[in-house]
Length: 349
Image (cartoon, rainbow, N blue to C red):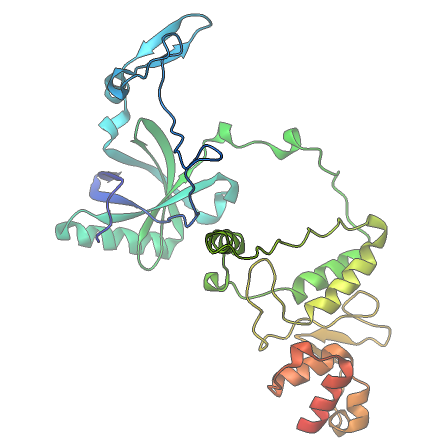
Protein backbone atom coordinates (compact mmCIF):
# COMPACT_ATOMS: atom_id res chain seq x y z
CA UNK A 1 0.00 0.00 0.00
CA UNK A 2 1.57 3.34 -1.05
CA UNK A 3 2.30 5.89 1.63
CA UNK A 4 -0.19 8.70 2.07
CA UNK A 5 1.05 12.28 2.25
CA UNK A 6 0.16 14.18 5.42
CA UNK A 7 0.86 17.50 3.68
CA UNK A 8 1.44 18.64 0.12
CA UNK A 9 2.98 21.91 -0.94
CA UNK A 10 5.93 23.68 -2.50
CA UNK A 11 9.46 24.10 -1.11
CA UNK A 12 10.57 27.64 -1.95
CA UNK A 13 14.32 28.18 -2.19
CA UNK A 14 15.01 31.62 -3.67
CA UNK A 15 13.77 31.40 -7.25
CA UNK A 16 13.80 27.59 -7.13
CA UNK A 17 10.53 25.85 -6.29
CA UNK A 18 10.00 22.15 -5.68
CA UNK A 19 6.52 20.59 -5.31
CA UNK A 20 6.72 17.93 -2.61
CA UNK A 21 4.63 15.58 -0.54
CA UNK A 22 5.35 15.13 3.19
CA UNK A 23 5.15 11.65 4.71
CA UNK A 24 5.46 10.40 8.28
CA UNK A 25 8.91 8.93 8.83
CA UNK A 26 7.96 7.01 11.97
CA UNK A 27 5.09 4.93 13.28
CA UNK A 28 4.37 3.71 16.78
CA UNK A 29 4.05 0.08 17.86
CA UNK A 30 2.33 0.79 21.17
CA UNK A 31 -0.48 -1.57 22.15
CA UNK A 32 -3.77 0.33 22.34
CA UNK A 33 -6.63 -0.53 24.70
CA UNK A 34 -10.33 0.30 24.64
CA UNK A 35 -11.91 1.71 27.78
CA UNK A 36 -14.51 -0.59 29.34
CA UNK A 37 -16.72 -0.26 32.39
CA UNK A 38 -15.35 -2.54 35.10
CA UNK A 39 -17.25 -5.80 35.39
CA UNK A 40 -18.74 -5.49 31.90
CA UNK A 41 -17.71 -5.57 28.25
CA UNK A 42 -19.36 -2.21 27.62
CA UNK A 43 -17.25 0.36 25.77
CA UNK A 44 -16.81 3.77 27.38
CA UNK A 45 -16.72 6.52 24.76
CA UNK A 46 -15.84 10.20 24.99
CA UNK A 47 -18.53 12.52 23.70
CA UNK A 48 -18.72 16.27 23.07
CA UNK A 49 -21.45 17.40 25.43
CA UNK A 50 -22.93 20.83 26.06
CA UNK A 51 -22.17 21.36 29.74
CA UNK A 52 -25.34 23.42 30.25
CA UNK A 53 -27.89 21.17 28.50
CA UNK A 54 -26.07 17.84 28.81
CA UNK A 55 -26.82 17.10 25.16
CA UNK A 56 -24.26 15.85 22.64
CA UNK A 57 -23.05 18.43 20.07
CA UNK A 58 -22.19 17.62 16.44
CA UNK A 59 -18.63 18.40 15.39
CA UNK A 60 -19.83 20.81 12.66
CA UNK A 61 -21.64 22.88 15.30
CA UNK A 62 -18.48 23.49 17.32
CA UNK A 63 -16.50 26.74 17.00
CA UNK A 64 -13.33 27.86 18.76
CA UNK A 65 -13.59 30.28 21.67
CA UNK A 66 -10.79 32.22 23.42
CA UNK A 67 -11.55 32.91 27.06
CA UNK A 68 -11.19 36.56 28.07
CA UNK A 69 -12.35 35.85 31.58
CA UNK A 70 -16.11 35.32 31.52
CA UNK A 71 -16.66 36.09 27.85
CA UNK A 72 -15.32 34.47 24.69
CA UNK A 73 -13.93 35.64 21.38
CA UNK A 74 -15.38 33.26 18.77
CA UNK A 75 -13.19 32.19 15.83
CA UNK A 76 -14.31 30.06 12.88
CA UNK A 77 -11.92 27.43 11.39
CA UNK A 78 -12.21 29.19 8.00
CA UNK A 79 -10.94 32.43 9.57
CA UNK A 80 -7.80 30.67 10.80
CA UNK A 81 -7.21 29.17 7.36
CA UNK A 82 -7.50 32.61 5.77
CA UNK A 83 -4.58 34.04 7.80
CA UNK A 84 -2.27 31.02 7.36
CA UNK A 85 0.97 32.04 5.54
CA UNK A 86 0.95 30.86 1.93
CA UNK A 87 -2.50 29.37 2.45
CA UNK A 88 -0.83 26.33 4.11
CA UNK A 89 0.87 25.26 0.87
CA UNK A 90 4.28 26.94 1.09
CA UNK A 91 7.41 25.66 2.86
CA UNK A 92 9.60 28.75 2.71
CA UNK A 93 13.36 28.20 3.26
CA UNK A 94 14.88 31.30 4.89
CA UNK A 95 18.50 30.11 4.91
CA UNK A 96 20.94 27.32 5.70
CA UNK A 97 22.87 26.53 8.90
CA UNK A 98 25.41 23.90 9.89
CA UNK A 99 23.58 20.75 10.98
CA UNK A 100 25.59 20.56 14.21
CA UNK A 101 24.48 24.06 15.21
CA UNK A 102 20.96 22.83 16.02
CA UNK A 103 20.81 21.50 19.58
CA UNK A 104 19.07 18.10 19.91
CA UNK A 105 16.48 19.56 22.33
CA UNK A 106 14.95 21.55 19.46
CA UNK A 107 14.07 18.46 17.35
CA UNK A 108 10.52 17.17 17.58
CA UNK A 109 9.32 14.90 14.75
CA UNK A 110 10.68 13.65 11.43
CA UNK A 111 8.93 13.61 8.05
CA UNK A 112 10.14 12.48 4.63
CA UNK A 113 9.87 14.80 1.64
CA UNK A 114 9.42 13.36 -1.85
CA UNK A 115 8.98 15.08 -5.23
CA UNK A 116 5.42 15.23 -6.53
CA UNK A 117 6.01 13.54 -9.86
CA UNK A 118 8.87 12.51 -12.16
CA UNK A 119 9.37 15.99 -13.70
CA UNK A 120 10.69 17.26 -10.33
CA UNK A 121 13.08 14.37 -9.65
CA UNK A 122 16.10 16.23 -11.08
CA UNK A 123 15.55 19.31 -8.89
CA UNK A 124 14.97 17.09 -5.85
CA UNK A 125 18.17 15.08 -6.44
CA UNK A 126 20.21 18.23 -7.01
CA UNK A 127 18.98 19.84 -3.78
CA UNK A 128 19.42 16.65 -1.75
CA UNK A 129 22.99 16.11 -2.98
CA UNK A 130 24.05 19.72 -2.43
CA UNK A 131 22.67 19.79 1.14
CA UNK A 132 24.17 16.42 2.01
CA UNK A 133 27.63 17.30 0.70
CA UNK A 134 27.64 20.66 2.50
CA UNK A 135 26.26 19.18 5.76
CA UNK A 136 23.78 22.06 5.86
CA UNK A 137 20.20 22.22 7.10
CA UNK A 138 17.62 24.52 5.58
CA UNK A 139 15.53 26.46 8.09
CA UNK A 140 11.95 26.95 6.96
CA UNK A 141 8.38 27.50 8.17
CA UNK A 142 5.06 26.13 6.98
CA UNK A 143 1.49 25.70 8.17
CA UNK A 144 -0.20 22.31 8.58
CA UNK A 145 -3.59 21.61 10.16
CA UNK A 146 -4.01 25.09 11.53
CA UNK A 147 -0.57 25.29 13.14
CA UNK A 148 2.68 26.88 11.97
CA UNK A 149 5.85 24.82 12.25
CA UNK A 150 9.52 25.67 12.29
CA UNK A 151 11.44 22.94 10.43
CA UNK A 152 14.98 21.94 9.53
CA UNK A 153 15.37 20.37 6.11
CA UNK A 154 18.16 17.79 6.19
CA UNK A 155 19.44 15.38 3.58
CA UNK A 156 21.18 12.02 3.49
CA UNK A 157 22.11 9.73 0.62
CA UNK A 158 18.48 8.75 0.03
CA UNK A 159 15.97 11.37 1.07
CA UNK A 160 15.34 14.93 2.25
CA UNK A 161 13.77 15.03 5.69
CA UNK A 162 11.76 17.78 7.36
CA UNK A 163 12.49 17.82 11.09
CA UNK A 164 9.93 19.87 12.99
CA UNK A 165 11.58 22.04 15.62
CA UNK A 166 10.35 23.50 18.88
CA UNK A 167 10.03 27.27 18.85
CA UNK A 168 12.63 29.05 21.05
CA UNK A 169 10.03 30.01 23.68
CA UNK A 170 9.02 26.35 23.98
CA UNK A 171 12.50 25.18 25.02
CA UNK A 172 13.02 25.52 28.75
CA UNK A 173 16.25 26.78 30.28
CA UNK A 174 17.53 23.96 32.54
CA UNK A 175 19.23 26.47 34.81
CA UNK A 176 15.91 28.16 35.54
CA UNK A 177 13.78 25.00 35.78
CA UNK A 178 16.03 22.59 37.68
CA UNK A 179 18.13 22.59 40.82
CA UNK A 180 21.38 21.58 39.12
CA UNK A 181 24.77 21.16 40.84
CA UNK A 182 27.25 23.97 40.38
CA UNK A 183 29.91 23.51 37.76
CA UNK A 184 33.14 22.09 39.07
CA UNK A 185 35.73 19.53 38.10
CA UNK A 186 35.38 16.14 39.84
CA UNK A 187 38.38 14.61 41.65
CA UNK A 188 40.93 13.31 39.13
CA UNK A 189 40.82 9.62 40.20
CA UNK A 190 37.01 9.51 40.00
CA UNK A 191 37.01 11.29 36.64
CA UNK A 192 39.58 8.87 35.20
CA UNK A 193 37.57 5.90 36.45
CA UNK A 194 34.35 7.33 35.03
CA UNK A 195 35.97 7.96 31.64
CA UNK A 196 37.38 4.45 31.66
CA UNK A 197 33.90 3.08 32.37
CA UNK A 198 32.50 5.09 29.44
CA UNK A 199 35.26 3.69 27.19
CA UNK A 200 34.63 0.14 28.41
CA UNK A 201 30.90 0.44 27.71
CA UNK A 202 31.31 2.05 24.27
CA UNK A 203 29.42 0.11 21.59
CA UNK A 204 28.65 0.44 17.90
CA UNK A 205 25.29 2.11 17.21
CA UNK A 206 23.07 -0.35 15.38
CA UNK A 207 19.35 0.48 15.76
CA UNK A 208 18.39 -3.10 14.86
CA UNK A 209 20.04 -4.31 18.09
CA UNK A 210 17.43 -2.55 20.24
CA UNK A 211 13.89 -3.55 21.05
CA UNK A 212 11.03 -2.28 23.19
CA UNK A 213 11.11 -4.80 26.04
CA UNK A 214 8.23 -3.15 27.89
CA UNK A 215 5.95 -3.41 24.86
CA UNK A 216 6.93 -7.07 24.51
CA UNK A 217 5.92 -7.65 28.14
CA UNK A 218 2.59 -5.89 27.54
CA UNK A 219 1.90 -8.26 24.65
CA UNK A 220 3.00 -11.23 26.81
CA UNK A 221 0.66 -10.02 29.59
CA UNK A 222 -2.25 -9.87 27.14
CA UNK A 223 -1.44 -13.35 25.76
CA UNK A 224 -1.10 -14.80 29.26
CA UNK A 225 -4.39 -13.30 30.44
CA UNK A 226 -6.10 -14.47 27.25
CA UNK A 227 -4.88 -18.01 27.95
CA UNK A 228 -5.29 -17.69 31.74
CA UNK A 229 -1.58 -18.26 32.22
CA UNK A 230 1.03 -17.08 34.73
CA UNK A 231 2.22 -13.47 34.58
CA UNK A 232 5.90 -12.68 35.24
CA UNK A 233 6.49 -9.37 37.02
CA UNK A 234 9.57 -7.24 36.43
CA UNK A 235 12.40 -6.93 38.95
CA UNK A 236 12.53 -3.69 40.98
CA UNK A 237 14.77 -0.85 39.81
CA UNK A 238 18.29 -0.69 41.29
CA UNK A 239 18.95 1.63 44.23
CA UNK A 240 20.67 4.98 43.67
CA UNK A 241 24.48 5.00 43.94
CA UNK A 242 25.73 6.25 47.30
CA UNK A 243 28.06 9.21 46.76
CA UNK A 244 30.44 7.82 49.38
CA UNK A 245 30.81 4.54 47.47
CA UNK A 246 31.19 6.05 43.98
CA UNK A 247 34.74 4.71 43.43
CA UNK A 248 33.72 1.22 44.51
CA UNK A 249 30.68 1.38 42.23
CA UNK A 250 32.88 2.51 39.33
CA UNK A 251 35.34 -0.34 39.91
CA UNK A 252 32.58 -2.95 40.07
CA UNK A 253 30.96 -1.45 36.99
CA UNK A 254 34.25 -1.77 35.11
CA UNK A 255 34.43 -5.45 36.10
CA UNK A 256 30.91 -6.04 34.81
CA UNK A 257 31.58 -4.05 31.62
CA UNK A 258 34.17 -6.66 30.65
CA UNK A 259 31.43 -9.24 30.00
CA UNK A 260 28.82 -8.92 27.23
CA UNK A 261 25.41 -8.58 28.82
CA UNK A 262 21.94 -7.34 28.10
CA UNK A 263 21.63 -3.59 28.76
CA UNK A 264 18.37 -1.62 28.46
CA UNK A 265 16.74 -3.99 26.03
CA UNK A 266 19.84 -4.38 23.83
CA UNK A 267 20.96 -7.90 22.90
CA UNK A 268 24.34 -8.99 24.28
CA UNK A 269 27.21 -7.11 22.65
CA UNK A 270 29.28 -8.92 20.08
CA UNK A 271 32.38 -10.50 21.58
CA UNK A 272 34.60 -9.25 18.79
CA UNK A 273 34.88 -5.88 20.51
CA UNK A 274 37.31 -5.79 23.43
CA UNK A 275 36.27 -3.38 26.20
CA UNK A 276 38.95 -1.26 27.81
CA UNK A 277 40.73 -3.10 30.68
CA UNK A 278 40.32 -2.12 34.30
CA UNK A 279 43.13 -0.38 36.13
CA UNK A 280 43.67 -1.14 39.83
CA UNK A 281 44.06 2.55 40.60
CA UNK A 282 41.00 3.48 38.59
CA UNK A 283 43.12 5.16 35.92
CA UNK A 284 44.63 4.36 32.56
CA UNK A 285 48.17 4.03 33.85
CA UNK A 286 50.00 2.29 36.75
CA UNK A 287 53.08 2.96 38.85
CA UNK A 288 55.45 1.23 36.43
CA UNK A 289 54.57 3.67 33.68
CA UNK A 290 52.51 1.20 31.70
CA UNK A 291 49.67 2.63 29.60
CA UNK A 292 46.71 0.88 28.11
CA UNK A 293 45.62 1.35 24.51
CA UNK A 294 42.91 -0.58 22.67
CA UNK A 295 42.78 -3.26 25.36
CA UNK A 296 46.51 -4.17 25.22
CA UNK A 297 49.33 -3.32 27.62
CA UNK A 298 51.99 -1.04 26.08
CA UNK A 299 55.25 -1.10 28.03
CA UNK A 300 57.75 0.04 25.42
CA UNK A 301 59.17 -3.52 25.20
CA UNK A 302 58.37 -6.31 22.82
CA UNK A 303 56.21 -9.06 24.34
CA UNK A 304 58.19 -12.16 25.25
CA UNK A 305 57.28 -15.75 24.51
CA UNK A 306 56.60 -16.19 28.22
CA UNK A 307 53.19 -14.56 27.73
CA UNK A 308 52.09 -17.61 25.77
CA UNK A 309 53.27 -20.13 28.37
CA UNK A 310 51.28 -21.46 31.28
CA UNK A 311 53.19 -19.32 33.76
CA UNK A 312 52.66 -16.20 31.66
CA UNK A 313 48.94 -16.87 31.36
CA UNK A 314 48.64 -17.23 35.13
CA UNK A 315 49.85 -13.66 35.53
CA UNK A 316 47.16 -12.23 33.26
CA UNK A 317 44.11 -10.53 34.74
CA UNK A 318 40.61 -11.79 34.05
CA UNK A 319 40.07 -8.98 31.56
CA UNK A 320 43.27 -9.86 29.69
CA UNK A 321 42.26 -13.53 29.69
CA UNK A 322 38.85 -12.58 28.37
CA UNK A 323 40.43 -10.50 25.58
CA UNK A 324 42.66 -13.42 24.62
CA UNK A 325 39.70 -15.84 24.69
CA UNK A 326 37.82 -13.45 22.41
CA UNK A 327 40.66 -13.41 19.91
CA UNK A 328 40.84 -17.21 20.06
CA UNK A 329 37.07 -17.34 19.47
CA UNK A 330 36.52 -19.54 22.53
CA UNK A 331 32.81 -20.14 22.97
CA UNK A 332 31.01 -19.61 26.26
CA UNK A 333 33.66 -17.23 27.59
CA UNK A 334 31.12 -14.70 28.84
CA UNK A 335 29.90 -17.20 31.47
CA UNK A 336 33.38 -18.37 32.60
CA UNK A 337 35.09 -17.29 35.80
CA UNK A 338 38.82 -16.51 35.82
CA UNK A 339 39.89 -20.09 36.47
CA UNK A 340 37.73 -21.46 33.66
CA UNK A 341 39.00 -18.76 31.32
CA UNK A 342 42.61 -19.63 32.21
CA UNK A 343 42.02 -23.35 31.53
CA UNK A 344 40.29 -22.63 28.23
CA UNK A 345 43.07 -20.30 27.01
CA UNK A 346 45.75 -22.81 28.04
CA UNK A 347 43.97 -25.60 26.17
CA UNK A 348 43.66 -23.46 23.03
CA UNK A 349 47.28 -22.14 23.14
